[in-house]
Image (cartoon, rainbow, N blue to C red; front, side):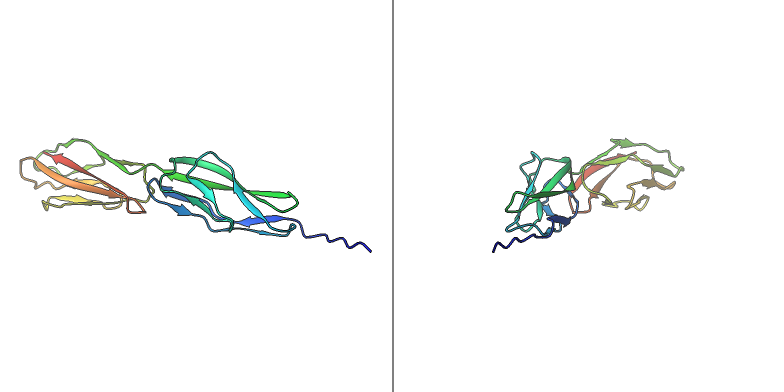
Length: 178
């Protein structure tokens, strides 16, 4: 008598996309697999050496992984070399770089708003803070907009502004207001 076993089809499911900032490691929720025959092995495509997968189906991004957007393929293979795949989107943002116009100029007696700060890299949303050395300056902590009140005395002022991304990475600039 010969007994033939027919196992359920091999499947791969779940897992999650990853978004992080260069310098921060992160991981997906595990990809899971059912069916197939015997032991199953997980692998991941791609050439970024900072992206790996363990045999529990969890994808890892090392803090030194090259920034960029990667559409990788997770493959599970059983003992009979049957494979199933699922894609994962991995976004590794550059480090936070904060820029502003070097000098913000206004005239005594005029209130003025400046949308002259920009952030590149990092993972939003961003929060902004500043030293607030003068009550005539306000900063929108969500947008980075600087408001100078009409009553600001004639002179030159320096404010230190910091932008912080979702993961706590930051950059600081000094803005001159005259």
